Amino acid sequence: MGEKTENYVSDIHNADYEEEYHRILLDHNCLIDISGRETESLNGTWHFCVDPYDTCRRAHWFREIRCNDTGAEQPVDWDFDWWERTPVPGTWNVQKPELFWYEGSGIYMRTFRYVPREAGERVFLCFEGAAYEASVFLNGVFIGTHNGGSTPFTVDVSGAVKTDNRLIVVVDARRSPLRVPMDNTDWFNYGGLYRDVHLARVPNVYIKDWFARLAPDGTFSKILVDVAVSGVDGADGERKAALAIPELGIEEEISLRQSAGRGVFAVNADLLSLWEPENPKLYDVSIRLLPEDGGPGGDLVHDRIGFREIKIRGREILLNGKNIFLKGVSVHEDHVLLGKTTTSEIIRETIHDLKEMNGNYLRLAHYPHDRRFARIADEEGVLLWEEIPVYWAIAFGNKSVYRDAENQLAELIQRDRNRASVIIWSVGNENPDTEERLEFMSSLAKKARELDETRLVSAACLVNHTKLKIEDRLSEFLDIIGVNEYYGWYDPDFDNLSAIFSNSSPDKPVIVTEFGGGARSGQRGNINDLFSEDYQKALYIKQVETFKKYPFIAGLSPWILYDFRCPRRFNRYQEGYNRKGLIDADRKTKKLAFFVMQAFYKEDSHETGHSL
Ligand code: GCU
Image 1 (cartoon, protein in one colour):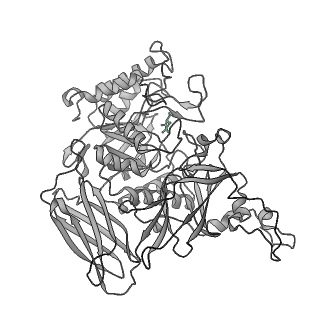
Image 2 (spheres, rainbow, N blue to C red):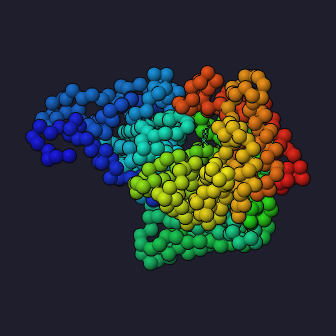
Image 3 (cartoon, rainbow, N blue to C red):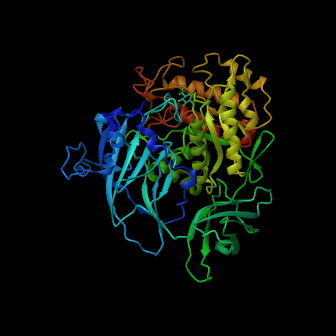
């Protein structure tokens, strides 16, 4: 921008207005673990207004200044308390028909009262998900901006909170080549404050986050618990933390170096019942920060944790030392009535449908799903693949895009690393094999391992259709090679599928992360009629018959459990939906191919050549 002349009016002349809101980024560094805490919900009806030109941020509406310096009222263009009310959580696309295709900014506002309970307590605003970029304002003050449409963020507002508060959030849902995902995907771009919003109170010295897991040492009897404490005064004095797992008779204390505020419990647990799909055993685990005087009180967090080990050995995936075949299916976070907002009931119904298919595993595509999914999967004994939306052609050469992707990975891992059901972190899907992409995604794979040495790292890789081989330079950096293939659909010559597997000799497990074809529920025909259920069923039969011949295939997640909205698909059978679901978008009507997978997953290992 040139120099600001006298007639410069910032909110109409400043093209770089977003810089102001990118100076304070709310990222994984300010994320505190609230999964083990009581929080106060800020869900409910918020005032809402569309903001297609992002004027709230351009013209600083959030300051709510009605009068000029002389006290004269100005003709402002905002009216937060007068605006209509809308439910939070929710996506505006399905809440208001006139906003179905809207992809701009939306302004949310609500008031709330805050009365301190404990001297020195700290107050956090906690957001489970806002698509895509969210700028938070409290009592007229800019608090910070979060990037990433599917991961949680928290922010300490102790310095800005009052008794009566006005909270404004601008959510910008625009797609962009410089976002993660970029502007071209195969799913619907829902916008809004679409997941829960909470307020959390913590003592002045509190447990920021913690990570409990089975030591990945093959003994299945040693528990490690990392603790990170915040608010310590930096003195070299010692603070102590106490770990309790009553059912295992474990009560341990460790000292935390105050300056570092970190510590690790390492305790033996010979009586441990390992978590597994057939026996999803969870233990009550609590950690208490002991006051300096050793008395009662102190910050307390608790959660229900499953302990298990996931590893690979050659081409096998080992859960607690036993080879397991991942009998799965992919699923989007997409609901006809709720858009990208979900509920515990919907999650349980999804898991019920998986189990009816005799499955034990879900690929949560292509972004982090709601926090509750992994918690419910822990209870239900379902294994999960979780993924960040490094999808298709990301701007791999852009450093700020990498920081965004890495931050979303770090927020996902920090949120779900205490969940036994999560066994695989995926760093992306179907990306073009370039040098920049290799650098970008191999760095993400390394970061995932750095943050969590107990899980497997994967991605949906590419097949070399010219050489008919599983070949992707990224696979060197992965524990499991994910392979998307659409033989019998996009690739007509089905015989090439066997050729690919026969020509490939992977040295690690392969999961066929996508296969399938479209069918409109109820559309019948013969096996050559595209988009008929009969075609889809015949395709699935040929696919599973092929898989039986290749023991290096350690798992499957066909594309996809339910039909889902997709703005790239408008033929007479799709009408704005991707129809590759095994179940219709109504989440009730099962297609013929569903029963092919149900039968295949039910077969014993000797028939499928896999240890199912
Ligand atoms: C790709 C992609 C999916 C997409 C699917 C399809 O493999 O990973 O996101 O929906 O193919 O074409 O239906």
